[in-house]
Image (tube, rainbow, N blue to C red; front, side, top):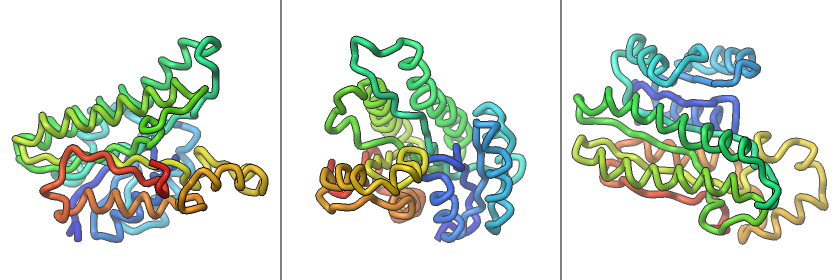
Length: 243
């Protein structure tokens, strides 16, 4: 159990954010939710109001957000960087540099900023958990999705490097790397309700189905718990055997 520990979940209304927030709350954490998308503000606020001990935070910078958690809870003990950006499909010779830069900013630069801000607070206390939600895509490589796979691969590498750097401060850093998970961020309703499309996707997954956000959230909750205190620098695929 997380016994009132303060946890921050970013991009809570995207990817597996709401499932992660619920899983941490159910384990006893005091959860703070952040979403960089202003258009998600109303949905974020409504979600937070519906779940006990879950608090919405304003759309601010990484350092301001971490400071807001500290001001409210006294300390930040768990950071879940639930990073999301559309997987833009383009052959490499047609890919736009601005799309690559946007992918890298959302999936690498932003979580780096949040990890840096959290680590600065965690290091003096010699305790903390940083969990990056990335993707299993870099394990295989995805033709025509090189921008997305490149950015996610960089995030996976970030987790490995930060784990070794911060181990001396007793901060564990791990990544949860989903793929083929049923989430509106990557599998909108129109796709889920298309039998031909779903058959094509599920045939690629050894378990022959899409994963559920709650299954990813369970892995996140484990990495946030004391049960993972001797586990750091791990990138865990949650992809039904695909990776």
